[in-house]
Amino acid sequence: MLNFLDKYKFIKGQAAFGVELVFSTKESYTLIALELASNKEGIEVSRRFLDTSLEEIKKENIKKLPIYFSVGGKGVIHKKVKTDDNIKHQELLNQVLPNASINDFYLQKSKLEEFECWVSVIRKDVLDKLIKKIEDLGLFGVQIYLGPFVLENTIPLLDKITLLTTSHELLIENNMIIQLDSLGSVSNGEEYNLEGEIINSHELIAFGTALSHFIPPNGLTSIEASEVFEIQQEYYYKNKYVTVGFAMLVLFFVITIINMLIGNSYQDTNNELQYQVNSKKQYVDELAILREEFNIKEQFVQNSGVTQASKISFYADQIALSVPESIQLNQLFINPLTKRINKAEDIHFKYNKIKISGTVAKSIALNNWVKQLKKYEWTDDINIISFVQDNLQHAGEFELEIYIN
Image 1 (cartoon, one colour):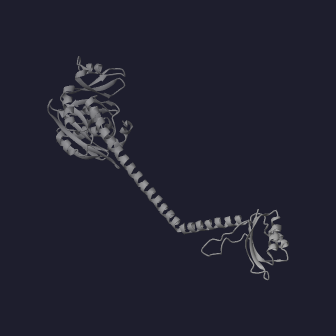
Image 2: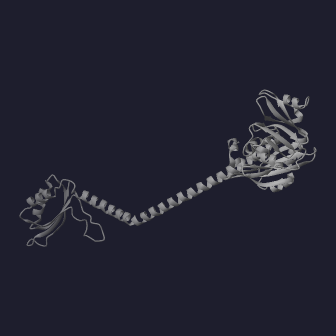
Image 3: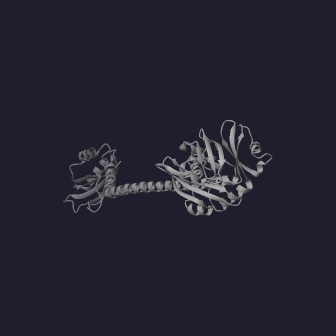
């Protein structure tokens, strides 16, 4: 899962331990360790541990850095053999230990010429005990090499034809180890300057082993141990999950901040709009009142007949022409009021009606006039509302209503 991330520094880590482990017997060994760290200036030695132990390394490795091992000493055999692209591990082992079974040994190849390589072997039961202890201590032993061949990427930095390590003298040609001679132990070590970093000969393999974290050796095929591979994958998974988890946390944090900023922006906009709405509410209420008044007046105008062809003058002319000499008109109302005007109430009219009041000498003259008015096609009905005459010497007062078609 997420294997493409393994090549990145933030997954591999920017620091690592390199440990040279030298077996003196099958059960005992000595350890030399260096911690390398990468920074802006390059790669430098952070800490050195001489004649230490795995328990001490666990105690010092509080950051859970990956640990690269280079195993040498008793029980580790190196031999230069013939090879080709199709040769099998069993055939290589037969050149080192005839009749030995590949099931009993771990095998490592270090390329020399096209048809020649170094083969390093160690018994599985010896190395498996070491791997088991590494697992039990919870150390991230992500890679195990055999012998000094991990120096492949360190040799070009030294420009030497011979090198001394903890237990071997190496003969160098074309940046490759062409010969190694066992020294048993190094009593008088040499110092090597690796681009400003001073490394003692007994620290050289530990340095090269740690350097393989940053510059993997291309010509070296390390041992294939399933337990080591699982430890390596566990280390990568741990870093990937931590990195991805942190990235997700940062992402969610950024999203939260963005949401808060957007939310605050929307809230400010909402508050501003709400303020504008409240400030304009008075005008909205006034508009509603004006709209209601407009509707009332519009209805009044429509009911009044103003919007239609007006016949008010026609009615008035027809009535005026029909009035006999014996009748005197006092008032004539076309669409009269239903009642007297009151400021607290709306004005209402009797539409399609004409109200007439006046005086007449005799009632028979009023009746004849009413009959004449009924002959007009625009009249629907005529009601005499009242007629009052005290005696024949005085004119009578009348009031009538004409209903218009």
